[in-house]
Image (tube, rainbow over all chains, first blue to last red):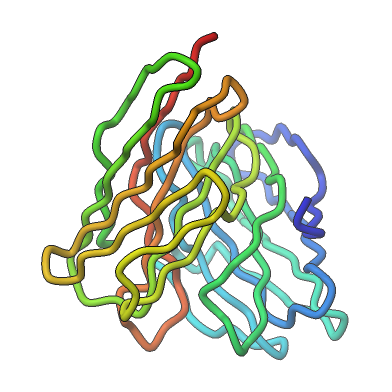
Length: 113
Length: 112
């Protein structure tokens, strides 16, 4: 167990809706990253947050947005859901001094119908 | 985005045998990591090897890194049924940003 928790575990939404996914970082970690993993693929980097600001972003449209809170927990928001947004969404936390050593939560499985 | 490539895509072995999987990447890196994923769940961090290291061990795991060939290998010795999972390599690709770049993974099946 990494100490990174995510909620909810599973979620079903319909096309056009909005969704919010949540992540609590491992104790002592101040950086959180979000990844999207489609079936049969490796995770793809969405963005990273440090000190409540976006600290890097992958090739995802603006309808993917995030927040980090003072306690280092984080949210991923996706607006105007599309069928291709169906995936496992993974949150990873790390410490700024070892930012690439990332520890993942169990993920949220999002299904868009 | 650029990704590493794991090879083979799938590997089936018997308990007690060794499993070797390989990873190639495209640009220079600061470090390379291996992760395990069971049945579409979260990724478990296995080992990190830095660009100035050539080999690293952790229990039954042995990782090598050849930066001249831009490749790494993960060896699992004396495999067990519980090792059945997908294995991914991830690199930072020496960028100022902080993303991990993953390959598509190797699916390992260990039968008893």
